[in-house]
Length: 168
Image (cartoon, rainbow, N blue to C red; front, side, top):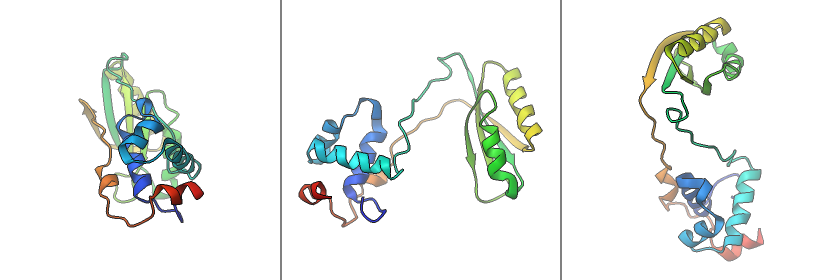
């Protein structure tokens, strides 16, 4: 990473991590992109330190874990309070993610899980009590996450040659 931008090597590293970070080693990535594993480890450290890589998260099948209901609750928050309300929503039992939207009336999306409809009703009631106005609820059957293929487009002309990289 140079001057706060990702070069093609950084993008390739991110792509391969997105496929399965838990079972992908720096050696595996190095083999895929033709660099040494020490170069890949150095790059990974820089991506983590800069905040580009924020963490390595577990992907839970909530249905198999005993929470068969997965819902997206779409809310409206007054813009001056949006950040505060979104953060407060994270503390509600059963909420698994909160997304702030920059435009439109539907500006806070809450993902939640439950064992029963009573759980989902409780979560909705608690969101309402915070001051979030619920405008829609969607019961999700499944969600499929995939790596961003744009990381492999190969169009940037930034460095990426191994000798340059090991010096920085």
